[in-house]
Length: 103
Image (tube, rainbow, N blue to C red; front, side, top):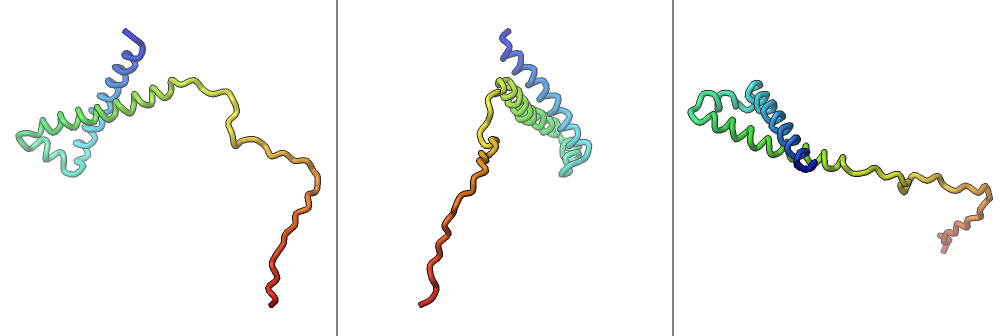
């Protein structure tokens, strides 16, 4: 199996684990009265299943995006904006002219 496919499957499983934990915390802490809505109604299991599936999609996507971005090779060349200014030690004459305010 290619390495990228294994990476994707691993991140989907990690996203599933995170989604199950997140959904359990949502129901456990009774956020927005979800415990009553999911456990006391007849179609509550469907709501729990949808929460797990859609959170799995979100968390797996984020995990895979982070993993792919970490695959990039680090740049060894210096970046712009971090160079020290050149100091020559010579005095420079600067003319500052202003218009006269007298009429």
